[in-house]
Image (cartoon, rainbow, N blue to C red; front, side, top):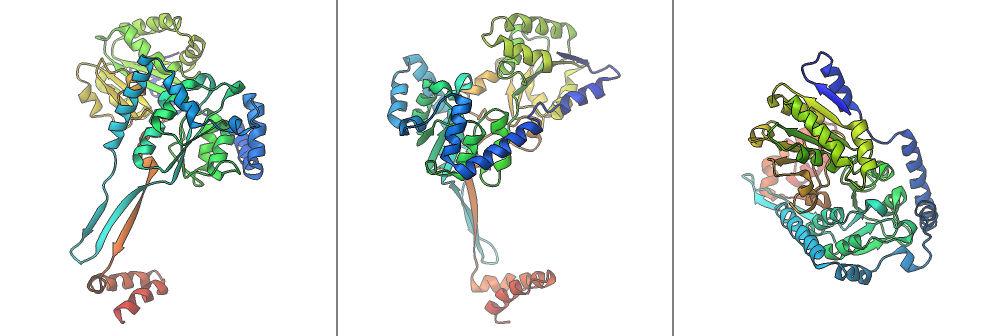
Length: 430
């Protein structure tokens, strides 16, 4: 792990190097993905079947091998224990309530010149959700992607999820039932993203693709942006915790590890103004890692990318946080609002000592699909707007055209676009 002290002469350079370390896919991944996309576009289902056999050790032959039906999803939901079913339903209810409040309003008004103006929002026709398979199967992510799409009014909701060795994760199927997913295809990787974007004989194309995945999935979404809409190009997860010495070191250690256990390339960062507290957190991390089933992953993440920054005062933390622009930011202080007011760049913020990032991953309500890799500087977490588009409209009366048309003619002629000007002049009788 990296330990930085803000007062040290070399701090600026070391901090800058840490911020600029992208932790994302290399050129080799990009080349592989380009080839996979071209192959799926050219050969469709045949290419999908070959990649599924190769990467998932599962060969789709019958219709049941390709697609999971609604009855199977319902059975998985019914088979849940009562406590787990209640937890999933609570999560779904809170996610739906939060995202329903995001729905934008249509506009329709007439201005002072007599023009009727406005805009109408509509959901896209079809959305594709990528759901990782195997050990990285997260029903919470399915809910976080599918429910906003349904709230947005998406007509057709499609899931692509790999089933390594033919194994189907029942929790994912139960979440799909609860969210009202229309189709589930047993394909994964960059090939699944290509199939959703371009379509095949079996799979109709979609308009928007969202959902987490590995480096190949993220790169495929990046390359296919423009063919389809995407939520974001996501990299390894990250968390920044700003904490004073009044916190329990074990709590903060657990918070840092909540992201480290995702991926060896995940990053956990602590900013504190107390060196002794920093030492206590580091010691607690060593103890906590030993308790984790994913200890090897968490250890690799913490050892390679874990960072502890000791500042003279937590007043310095917001400026550092804005440079980092982290996916998740916890502010564990007595007055988190003062710090939060100065943080402009964060995917999602968690305010106060009793607001662990993990609560946001499941049942708080706001979306946990968030920008990583400093992209919080210019992008936001997934919302209903990612599944909607806005169409503006204009209705011009004869009187309104006489009021503003001459100005448009002047501008069109100035740009050398005579036909533009003529289309207005003819209506004005000029």
